[in-house]
Image (cartoon, rainbow, N blue to C red; front, side, top):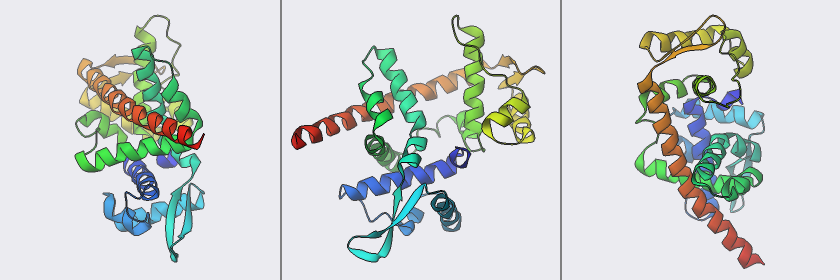
Length: 252
């Protein structure tokens, strides 16, 4: 979803999910717009405008506080939770596969937005206390801060693996037009991102949309970032799955 594919907007949603689920557990303040504005780095005006767009798209529902109907709570929709948790589910599934585990956690997260919301709450609580996991990886951060930049980065890494690992499915072309259509941005925007990467020596693409060069240090940074994500989310998925299993046992 293009609206959420930029770090500052993603973080607003990420913290909003945290605030709502923490409040439901009695571990946080009422999840209002004011509470959100006090927590995120975006300006209050930017946050309010973005939340208004989310409401218009029914990704956020404003509900009256049951204790004071004048207060409006921000409840994230299941669609938003699933979109914000898309990479979470991918990293958990990858970690389970690498460790030879049954896909217990990823199956729960795929089918249960409440479980995914709980995991995102746990993750955001960690980030609010310790800082983000992405800032130690400046080149990954560079792409994540741009519209659809992280998606472009993932497409480049996927192409590298497709070109170097036997048995890997062919990657989609990296031409400006193909990437623009895929990510719903302009070819000029894709061109700017790719040209920036080429000037920095991170990677280069050819005229036919193939990946011609990728810097070893750049690739290593992305892989370390991915490994951090897998470790972080798998540990939290252990907690979430155990919590939901306990709830089911208590209810049954």
